[in-house]
Length: 410
Image (cartoon, rainbow, N blue to C red):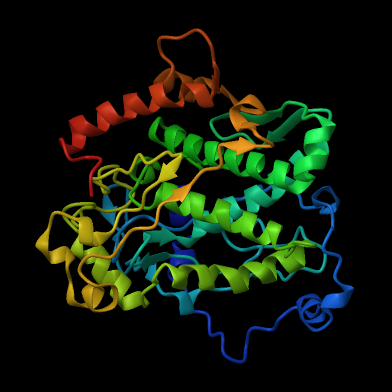
């Protein structure tokens, strides 16, 4: 997903500039998680997904624009004293909160804290490149929600509506035969469909922000559309949510949050996450190739290379793949080596033995403002995942004209 530049600016950039979370001795683990760990014999490993009542995600986390040490301008004037570092390490991660809002205000949840300690930023990993933890969390939350809604619709089919994002958004589920559900198990049918749909929605976000939609309607988010870390971060969160669901670590919203706190840093470390200062070095190494530090947020040409890895295999970009010799900075190579091997992630394509696109469709009815830019020559305002290649092709052509022939290469 993106940077959500408008929200980032309106929140005074606090979400990406707060102090690191101190974990040792201060992170209180929820009693429910302790109980499950100490009394595994009491845990119901067959809690149905459809029994988990989580609301549809209504927030987008406002972090992080690609780069490090970013400056901000408002009305063409540089904001003095504001510099967004963005790059963090695993030890800087705060506590996950389902559907965390731009300012972490949580008045809508009974018994929830008013202010949440979630911390997000760009983590650099040796084998997954830059990973933005905000879209990881956003799309993990969305995948959990969709899984709980797809599961009870498998026999009958139905429609799941989401909040508007430059268009009305919905996923249409077609009925699955009962014998297939019995053969594969409800979870193993519902989760791949939910993951596939979540990834399509994440691709839509990249498309629609290029064509002018923004979270606030004030600041353009085109600088973040298809930026180098976006789609890999999205699928990372989507796959992570599946890991938790299959591991029966989502029996309640509280347990899901606690499970995210445990598994997210572990998986980032498995990909070779480096400390925050080294991540900043990695960002600086590709300054002038992937991004331009001479520009300020929210200038749309800040990010000069765009990653269109839309699956089914989503490839990360590593700084060691960059064309600049400076990409091989001492801090990165000492931890990652000169030629680390990237780890691609795959979007699920099949569920219960059939292609998911035969079992589900994501549908968007584009609003008037976006349609003027996106669909000027068509009469229909309805878009599905089948239209994505043509829309992305238009973005590719425009990006090549603006950024040159290497616009889509590390």
